[in-house]
Image 1 (tube, rainbow, N blue to C red):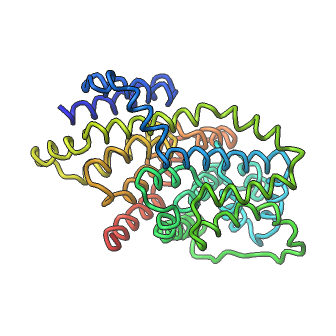
Image 2: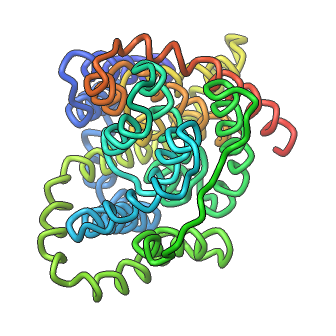
Image 3: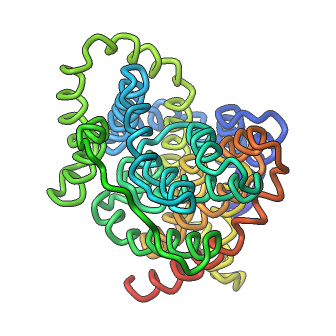
Length: 386
């Protein structure tokens, strides 16, 4: 019964997301379906909401995501992101290096549909290049950074759901990021080495300092992500106070993202309070279904269906945590990212394919080899260290 309730809820989320293209509505309907199998949820909804609202991990997640969007908006409004982009273009000494590493470097700044931001740069760096190759390179390298960079919302969500530190997660994901870059480089550019130009004015890279210093505070000094972001965003806001109010309003326009994360937590709390995860684990073991089937296909399908990494993690990780504990946290994250990268509803691949006038599915086929190599390495790596 527990397995049926969870599977039905997840299928409802996937179906409604595909039909309505609205993850918030899909999550609400999925939770209602889950609750219909467990009537106590309706009778004790106040208990679920209080448990969610008072959860320290939920509160820290909301603060961290708010600050990430505020920092990104401040950089865009002030023009700092454009200045940094121009500096990044001057850093690389060949078109192969520029078209590959510029999207990766600018990927340090999390933003929805961010691959479209770098698409015009990539096109101008290699105007005679194959549009399909340029699209795939831009899309792939723009997302390699998501495999480990600690200020991406999905990594922070993984941390808060699993009660593991962001720094621990990011450091263990670092080799996966390196393999993704190397596999992408050799697949798209062959055995040549990257070439760099001498940068005459280091001030060009000052705009990226708040993002880099946030990563350092988390990875090196082990600060919690929300606190590291608070320090840097507060300091940066003083120097960009002219754009502060406009940036706050821009963040508030993303209210749906915060609602999505709230309902992800409600879903998680229901699974925990009513021991649904434990019951699912018992049923799966009794039926003889291998756990790895769930670990691979649940985040992969969630990622392909939503096209949003934090959505895929939010849907799949609470279920897997309830069944296996923390044993497959990293695998869940990697397969969620893989699913998102292969998703035809991923905003980045839709927008960049349209920009270069190429077929979405052709782009997804082009990244299949580096993605397969990256996922294969990650599976071996995490079985070795966990």
